[in-house]
Length: 173
View 1 (cartoon, rainbow, N blue to C red):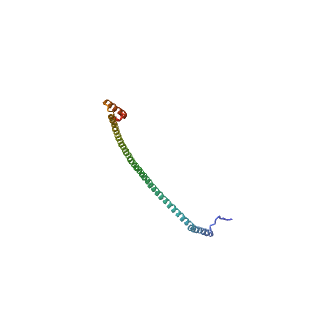
View 2: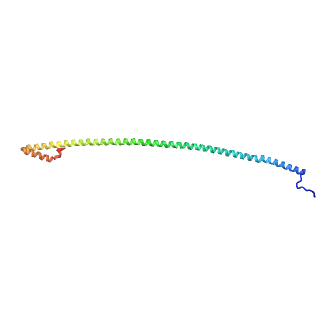
View 3: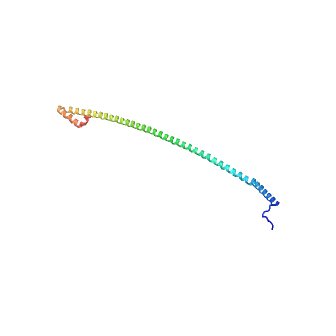
């Protein structure tokens, strides 16, 4: 037995190996062109899409932060404006309160003045009535004096009696 080789490198094996390698390379480049390149394109498109979405998200986040700051500023200005409105309302209420109190005091003074005038009028009327009564009493007394034709002691007694009838308080006021 001769030397049998496990692998014999003869021309047929070399040509088959060459054609097999050539077929593998052709198959590899063909599949690469048909499969790998479209997959790479899809992956590249997906990568670009994700990068674009991330950029949009970052822009949206910046825009949201700017809007938030703007709304917070507006909220502060609205709060300040509300405080100013409330302060103005309080000031106007104080002014109105002062006006109402002044009007009430003036009205009270007018009422008191009117009451004093009425009291004065009533006083004058009472004095006039009293004078009329005194005149009536004096004429009655004169009639009694003449009718009785009496002396001064009787006349003094009649005057005292009349004064007692009228009351001493009438002469004091």
